[in-house]
Amino acid sequence: MSVANNGSLSPDDGSVEIRDDVPDDLALCITTTCLPGGPVILDASGSPIPPGVTIGSIEYDDSSGTVTYPCAPDADGFDPAVEAIRITLSGTLVSLATSGSPSFDFLLAARVD
Image (tube, one colour):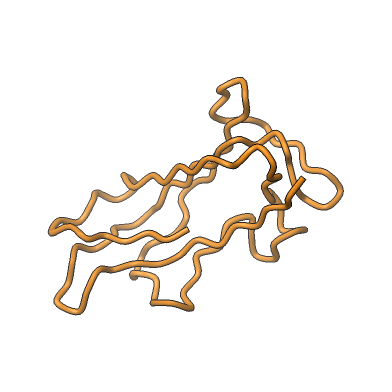
């Protein structure tokens, strides 16, 4: 999952929220068992993570619409009931620079069920 700020302004600290739906045939990894360093990793291999940007919180949604669904991982660390993930960033994602858009990737793991 890629994140970039293509705008001319920086969002306020803690105001960037990314939500992504999980397809029905996937079980999302929600522990470090299935993704060491996870369940969500900021990946700097493509471009450096903007200074001060970290994962603030991770929340999961299930079919009931529960925003803070209390996950139930299986023995491998996956939860097939998760239907969406919401990641809130801490820190400020700086605005568009002369060198290009500040960007980074999130790494998630999922299993086809």
